[in-house]
Amino acid sequence: MADLTNLESKLGEVAGLAMAAKTATQKVMKLAREDDNDMLVALLERMQEEAAETEQRCTDLAGDFEGKKTAILEEARETKEKASRMLEIYLDEESDVLDGFEFLTMAEAGEAGHWEVLEQMARSAKASQVEQLVSWALPIQQRHFETARETSAKLASDEDPNEES
Image 1 (tube, rainbow, N blue to C red):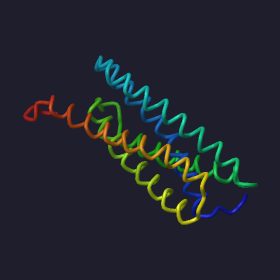
Image 2 (cartoon, rainbow, N blue to C red):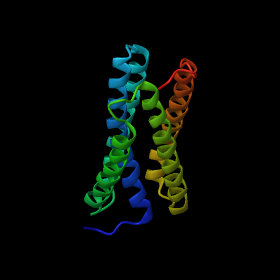
Image 3 (cartoon, rainbow, N blue to C red):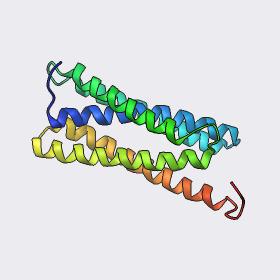
Image 4 (cartoon, one colour):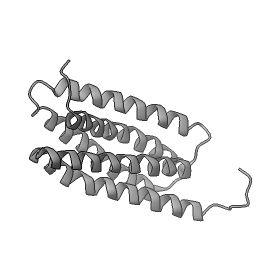
């Protein structure tokens, strides 16, 4: 397998995080359905669609790195596996939709951070195709983080803080 530059490796990581985001939103969507919250289901469906498009754009761009697409996508799969293990640890059978959005808040913050790192690397490398991808994806990731954070806060405000858990 081809050796990857830091830039190529980071591209693989953001692709893997997009893959993991599809799984995470699916799991939280299940919790929102159990809570009969159609508004949150719709929100999560949109986030999931954007994660799928992000994954596809990353995969397409990986193909532009001569002889390195397989290695970049292997990096993506490894990152997805790490993120999936964190999801399984954090959300168990007793988790509710608030737990789900708390997890998404952490995950989306990390994902936005990875995109910011990729942005800097692309700028330093003058990698215009990567810069274009980042300029499309970073605002979406930042919006996902803010949405997850705000939704967590709203769900928390609906909780009785004195109720035993």
